[in-house]
Length: 70
Image (cartoon, rainbow, N blue to C red; front, top):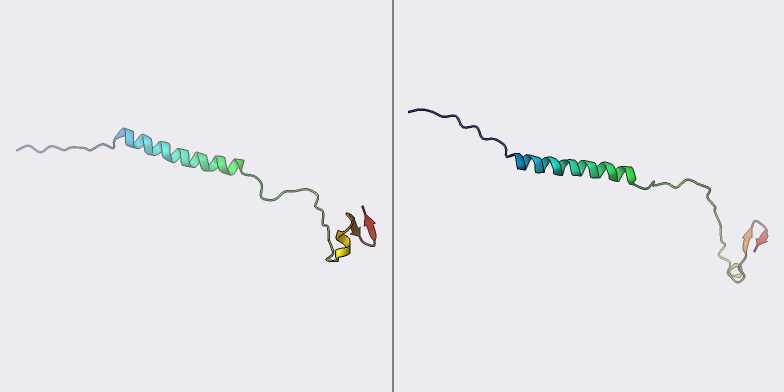
């Protein structure tokens, strides 16, 4: 009787598909991180305080301090 050693190889197609899927996931994640919009927008900010007095809503003017800005 003679013994034979059989080596089982990983199929090349399966390895290529796995490598392509892994690289697509990594590439997509890196591209998504690069192209994402910034979470904070820099620039001048304005704060407008409106009073709850109904007389202010009747004319289209905003009171700034003690002055009316129309």
